[in-house]
Length: 130
Image (cartoon, rainbow, N blue to C red; front, top):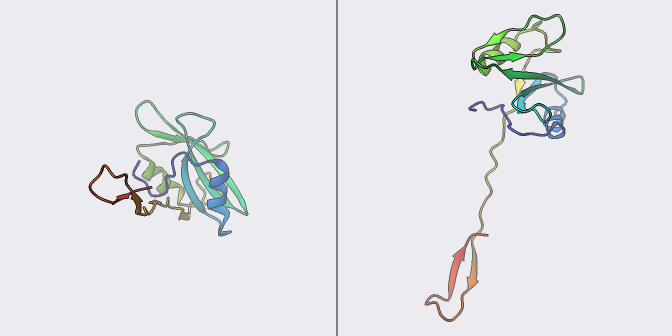
């Protein structure tokens, strides 16, 4: 999934930490649901709480989101259009989606280490990656 705010299998706890660390309402992200296989969770911060809305992919490839009771279910052809809809006020979320929390691509920095080889090898030292 090529969305910068999609975090994959992020735990509920880690999601809350990411969304609440700045204390700003309207931060949001998408993550995989821990309790419903195949579902996504749209998580948004509001008044130091994280509200979670489940998103289901229909058999035709479209998406449906569960919002507040009484709000008509809408079908979206893709997640970008779903997010765009809920960036506007009064769409059934506790607050409009204001600021996406982007997934950080953490790339470990590899250190090179020299090790002494035994006498059977021509070189005395060789570089290895830990």
